[in-house]
Length: 358
Ligand code: GLY
Image (cartoon, rainbow, N blue to C red):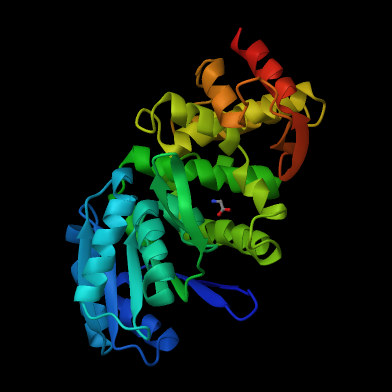
C-alpha cells in the first residue's frame, strides 16, 4: 500500500494505491464522507461490466445507498449534452449536497463526473477512482475537471479537488497495450521533467511486464511529482505548466489526427521528442536527451515523430491570421529530469519546426 497526501490548504486529500482496493472502496469513502447517505458511481460502458458491481457492493457494505450511471465509452462523452444527462441522472438518484459522486474509469469519466460534481447543487464531494494508467498518473490528481466544447477540448471546466483518490493497480491488467502505452507516455514525461534517475529506472524495467512488477511504486512516484507541483501551483499559473512538456506540439498532432488517429499519449510522446530537439537547437537541452527520451518511448511502441505539416503547428502554437502571434511559453528541458517554461517568439518556434520537417 502506498499513501500520499495532497496538502492544499483546507482541501487536503489522500491518494491510496493498493491492489484489491476496488472491493474496499466503501470503507475508504466512509472515512472521508462520514455523513453522506448516497454515493453515485459514474462509469463508462467499458468499465461498468468489469468493476462497477464490486464498487457499488463495497459502498453498500459501508452503509451508503449506491447509485450507478453508465456513459458510453469514448471522448465524445465529454460533452455538454452528456453533462446534462448526467445532471438529470444525479437528480433522479435524489443526490443532496451532503452526498458524493464517485468517478470510476479513465480520464473522460473523471473529467465529466468531476465537472458534474463541481457544479451540481453548487458542488458536491468527489471521489476519483481511476482505472487507466493515464488517469491514475495524471487526470485523477490535481483537481482539473472539464468537458469539451465545439471550439476545443476542456474549454468548460473547473478546479475541483477530490476528497479522496483510490487506485487499484489490478485494473491495469485489463488494459490493451495501446491504452497502457498511452499512460506510459505521461509516466515517462514525469521522469523527463523531474527526475533523471526515474528515467534510468524505467529504462531498466524493459517494458510493460517489468513496469507491472513495480507498479505501486511507479504510480506513487508519478503522483508524488504531481502532488508537489499542484501544491505549489494549483491554478496553473506557473510551475504547473511544466506538466505540459510535449503537450503544445502534441496538440498539433492531435489536431492533425482529428483526435482519432493518435492517442493523447502518442501525440505527447512525439511532442516531447520534438520539444527536446528544439531545446538542443536552442542550446538549452543537452545533446543526447532526445535520444534518451526516444529510447524509453520505443519500449512501448510510442512514436518519436509525427509529420503533421505546418498548418497544424501554427494552430497549436496559436498563430493568428496575420502570422504575428507574439511569444509562446514552451516547456523545454535544461537537462533530463529538469524542465522550465521558456518564452520564445512563435515565429522562431515555427521556423525551427519547419526546418525539422524538411
Ligand atoms: N494534466 C496537466 C495538469 O493537471 O496540469
